[in-house]
Structure formats: C-alpha cells, structure tokens
Image (cartoon, rainbow, N blue to C red; front, side, top):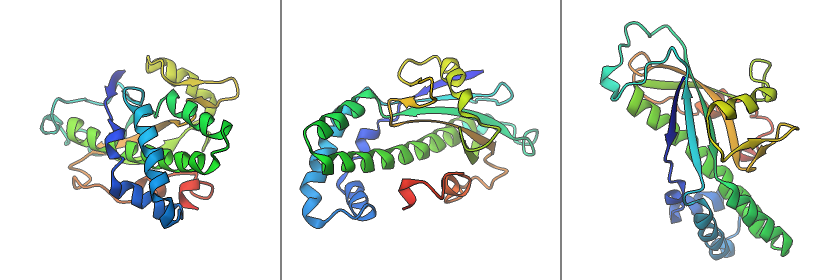
Length: 216
C-alpha cells in the first residue's frame, strides 16, 4: 500500500473569479458580493495548514516519479484503484458554528456553498496530481455509502490505513470535520485513455447526482 500526502493549498482558489462563480451558481444577489468576499476571507484563514488530502494506492498500482516511466503496455486493460481522503479541516466547522450561534445564517450558507465548491476543486487537484505523477488517469469515482461495494462501514478502516489524524468517523458513520469526504477512484493508464481528461466524470459516475446539493 502506497500512501501519499498531497498539499492542496485550496485557499489559493478563493479568487474573485471563483467567488463570482459561486455567487451565480447559488443565486446570491449582486448586493451580497461584499459579504461573500468577507466569508471567503474568514474561510481562507481556517484552511491554511488545516486542510489535507491523502491518497492510498493499491499494491498493484505502480507509482512512478514521472509519468514517462509507467509501462502502459502491461496495464492498459487493468483497472487500478486509489482511495482518497480529503478534508477542509476542523476550523471550518468552528467558523460555521460561530456564524450560526450569532444568527448569521446567510454567512453560514455562503460558507457551506464555498466549501462544497472547494471540495470539488480538490477532486480536480487530485486528478491532476495522479496524471502528472503516476501516468494514470482517473476514470471513475465511487463514494462510500453509494453502493454495496463501498459501504459506509468501510470508512473507519480506510481512515486508519491513511495514517492521518485530521478526519475521524463517528459510530454513526459521519465524518468529522463535516467538510470531509472519502472515495475510491478507478485508474487507467493515461495513454490508454488518450491522455486527456473526460469532462464531467465526477458527476457522471457519482451515485449522488439526484440528491447532490451542488446540482440543485
């Protein structure tokens, strides 16, 4: 089992362009721009050195120093797998509680919206890291709790195997911090996939499409 800690630096994604996309997607009004920017500023301080991403590669996956060293001839028809743990960190939960306890419900919703979008960017960041450092391409996502092959009961063991201390799973199989996710990725050699990303894979292979708040 190969384990890697990935430095995501997602706070650097909190740009004016990103916030405008969030404002439009979640139907915040033009007059809410300044408030949205303030929430993003609070969030950036929570993310620094608290967020984290961990990758665990199955034993049959060759992790190369560069993509050029992967032998795709022997692996083109073989599905490889990697498991990921991604979190925005515990300080985000504390910030949201502070908003809620002081009646700042709009800020709380803004924080929820921005956090969800940052997690989506985290998926893309992991895709790019895998493509650039292993020579593999992510072909499908499987989120725990969506099917029998990926039960929620498997998450505590996965978190233990990741040898990390930022994310825990409760007895009821809820992740803490709340803005955390555990999922499995199917990998294939990038050359066998044409070396290009297939747009929309996160949604196309996700069992949560009908209930995902980011698609409403």
